Length: 242
Ligand code: NAD
Image (cartoon, rainbow, N blue to C red; front, top):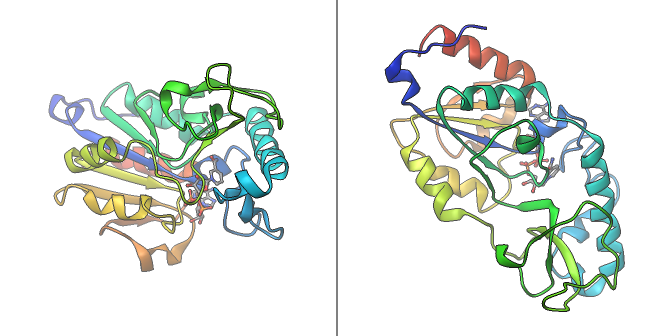
């Protein structure tokens, strides 16, 4: 693979915006779609903040299963290609994913808009200063040593505010190139946040779903491929010079 290393190119600000489709290539199910986590069961209710009060044990069990599934998989080729680009260009990553596959692939500068399943926070204290790394199941009765409140996954449930909004907005405003991979673009406020992309930026959407263009938040070129092959095509385009 040949990458354009001209000085002016290495100053480019690139932002990768990633969603569940990227990690689908690692074997993590998406939410929507044929094998999505919300089909055919009614797991969607465990993504509502109210379920921490009404169905705590079931909610923990659902997220424990998701944590175990993520721990079993490995970063995909596309995760590694992003890391490779980060070694050459000014690359920032904004992810809707709650897995840690970007970091396991060696990437840095990642905003986890929806939190991370590898962390827990005490109920009622969802703030980075209370965050603990957590790789086992969370059970009812597991308590924060500082606040004594029940622990819960540090992921955003419907009804809660996202992390890193202002920083993500700044990165998008300053971007020369934005690559959006594997998101249905249906989740708010993430979808609207993409409306802040620098109007001069070149934008790519990598997604095998051809009908995505009906709800693009920002005009761009759609690469109708899976994340791995789409990233490889993008790198070809980089090698040929933008
Ligand atoms: P989504 O489930 O709504 O949409 C997934 C998108 O990925 C679809 O548009 C689909 O066409 C596309 N896709 C499927 N296979 C792909 C592939 N091989 N390569 C590229 N794209 C592919 O996901 P979303 O838009 O990210 O929103 C769901 C929310 O649910 C996320 O924000 C996240 O919080 C959570 N979630 C996270 C994970 C994870 O961390 N891995 C997994 C499922 C859901």
